[in-house]
Amino acid sequence: MKKFLVLFFCFAAFSKYICQVRPINKLTLETTYSYTEIDKKLRDVIDEADKPSYFDDAFFNSLLKRIVSDKQYSDKEKTQLFYLMHKKLGFAFVGVNYLPPKQNYFTFFLGEVITLQKTAFLLRSLNYNVNELLVIVDSTAKRDAVIASNALLLATVLNPKAVLEKLHKYSLGEEIQSVKHPDIFNHYVCLSAAISQDTIITANLISNILGFKTEAQIEDALCALYAKNNPVSTIKDYIMGENNPENNLAIQTALCALAVKVPEATFEKSVKSFAKEASEKWKKDLFKDLASNKTPFNYSISDPEQIVTKKWEGIVLSFYTDGGLISNGNLLEFDPN
Image 1 (cartoon, rainbow, N blue to C red):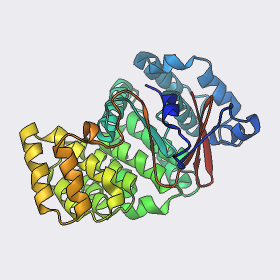
Image 2 (image 1 turned 90 degrees about the horizontal axis):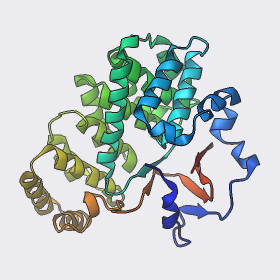
Image 3 (image 1 turned 60 degrees about the vertical axis):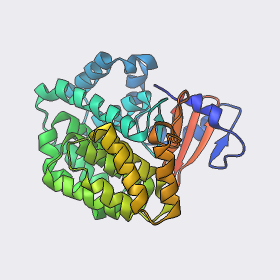
């Protein structure tokens, strides 16, 4: 699944990446989120097993069930362990995702949702009381988006029905933008909404798609909406209303969702129709490239052979020989190889 094959993409010409030919400095590593915010005893629990073990669903779900059931851990510690487990998979999001070969962002997002749904199915028998996890979300969202976001997702996995009412609030665009690191919180809200969604959350997602300004936040909302069987009319509303050419990937993600939801002939007809209706040259060119199969997997950064790094807005990513250092404002985190 992973990941730092992306070093192949790291050329000096790309100023958005910083490349080093050495391991990360130990002192720098100790300033990252996992070291400053999570106790070593918890890191040691997750490091007991080798990394490949976490890619075995049976191992991952068994360990998570054991952690959640263990009364020696507080709900905050369970959240931190959940985060560290996902770090092993490359799914612990702080502003960067890693698209496998031949995948666009929509199919990648759906794959993660399916994995989370399987975990939720296996843990349903615990009937876990998620009230304390939701208290953590409320109390930390404005100062620590990582713990708040992972508490929300863990609560959703453990008891999808119990989080619905809270998701009514958390999925509001103004609520998302009010927290620390809205990009992180929105990503986890959308993963949660893809698992647990009702008409209120659906309406909030549509409002966010049409109201958000940043590309990746729009993409996450689109993915959450169309992880469920919702009407595709919002796709056209968004595409025709988008006036920022820098959000081209969001338009492509909308079209990737459409491609999954409708027959191929309908999809092709829709792309041609959008091209006729669009007034902006950049948008017409985008549709033309899609119609002529010039866009790989309907997503311009996808690659048939390499893992691709997808960076959210404002992220600085520095590659070292042993992993990548993610800088998201005042948040630093290291993704090891």
